[in-house]
Amino acid sequence: MRFSDYNSMLYMNPVRCPVFEGEDGDADGGTDGVVDGDIVTDTDTDTSPPAAGTKKFSDEQQAEINRILATEKKKHQRTVQKAVDEANALRSKAQLTATERQELDSRLEMISNEMRTKDEQAKRAAKKQKEAHQLAIDSLTAERDTWSQRYTESTIERSLTDAAAASNAFSPKQIVAILGRTTQLVEVLDDEGQPTGQLSPKVKYQAKDKEGKPVTLDLSPEDAVKRMKDEDEYLNLFRGEGSGGAGLRSQPGGKKPDLKNLAADPVAYRKARKAGEINF
Image (tube, rainbow, N blue to C red; front, side, top):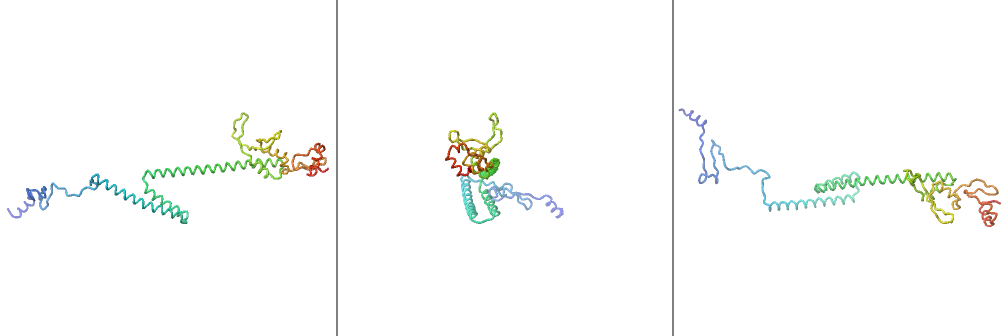
């Protein structure tokens, strides 16, 4: 056999033999290996690094780690809260534009949300939504009350003004000022005493009955103004009814002096003449 043919046989059929290290054939305390050409293969020992997250701690070690993390988290929260408090203090003192103030509020809200747990964030969001809802209700209620008040005032003023003009008042505004304070819109009732849904102005008029006792009457604006016109207290608020006959002057109101009573009462006659109610 030629030398070249011998080399070819070695190449095609490599020699494998066991290699032992250490005592009793135990390499590094129990490792068996074989030589495959120039490569040594370890058949028992796994030299790859442990997988991530497979590190095991005892209960005591885990508790200590949790304590350290909680302490650091609280320190971080205190630091951030201090920064938020300082920013809020600066916000209340500094003269910021509306845009700058809004941006600062947004940043503070973002920082505060990062410090809160999910439950706290949910509670805060629910609270803000409830406050916004209540604010909308309050705004609508105030707007409703404002328009209701305007309607009431305009209706009362218009009814009293029309009644004063019909009774020849010098200044309808004076009548409105006197009667408007005791005038309200009340619901109109039908013949069976049931509400109709319609509103009508009613004046609570202070008067006296036949015996001279004070009474409160619920009158329409027209009836209330006519009642005023017949009272001496309000004679100066109304125009006269025209020139009177038999020496009577035009009266400022609708009430005329009784000539028969004046003829029987000299004192009343002199008083009426002095007041300019008669000219004879």
